[in-house]
Image (cartoon, rainbow, N blue to C red):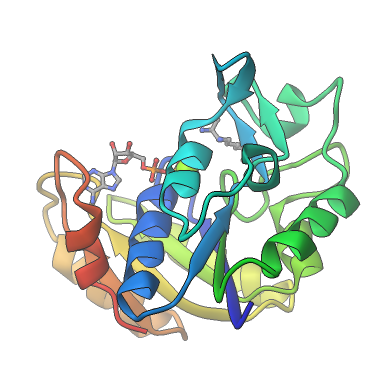
Amino acid sequence: MEKGYFITGTDTNVGKTWATIALMRYFKSQGKSVAGMKPVASGCLIQGGRLKNEDALLIQANASLPIDYDLINPYAYELPVSPHIAGVNNPVKLGQLAAGFETLKTLADIIVVEGAGGWYAPLNERETISDLAKLLALPVIMVVAIRLGCINHARLTYQAVAQSGVNCVGWIAVCTEPELLGGDQNIQTIKSTVDAPLLGVLPYREVADFDFFAEQLKM
Ligand SMILES: Nc1ncnc2c1ncn2[C@@H]1O[C@H](COP(=O)(O)OP(=O)(O)OP(=O)(O)O)[C@@H](O)[C@H]1O
Ligand SMILES: C[C@H](N)[C@H](N)CCCCCC(=O)O
Ligand SMILES: [Mg+2]
């Protein structure tokens, strides 16, 4: 691994996966080999006799090389609830995730790791996404869904990341709504209040166009 990034967001359902795949395509377009991880996924369906998650499958499909599902998504929980609830009978062990990440690191130039929920989403009874990002020692990219309330959410998340001692290397604006009154001004306001560069704005698209999204990124 030359570089790795931990993708967090202002909440669940803010565009982390779409931004993660856009980043993977972007790095590929720069001639880099890419792999990704969705360490903990809640909300899985049985496929081929085992639980699999949509985000993890997309990450697997967009890697530069074939990678075992287990390595990409070690914790696949059926219920679409917070991981500390979904995993009550098989709680997340951060050490196990760190060991898997060490293997993944040997496979590609760039590794992107998508969190679950936001920065303080609980992974088990004690630890949150922030603890995982710290343990993996990765800089963070913050994904912000541009919707009413996003300025506050972006500032809170940015501040929490900084307080955790983790470097936020940039943020991505994802337009998850077809039309948002004052959307551009929201982006400008976040840009002027968050001390990390805006890496790109992913426009609203009814159907994901990951190559187009990748073209909107610059880092
Ligand atoms: N650029 C976009 N244009 C339109 N809709 C979008 C865009 N990006 C994301 N969305 C919508 O937002 C939804 C959530 O996006 P995504 O799955 O990337 O969120 P997430 O933050 O990864 O959620 P989770 O916490 O469940 O992993 C998508 O299914 C899609 O409907
Ligand atoms: C099920 C959902 N799509 C995510 N994978 C998990 C979101 C966890 C949020 C926890 C919380 O902060 O309340
Ligand atoms: Mg996701």
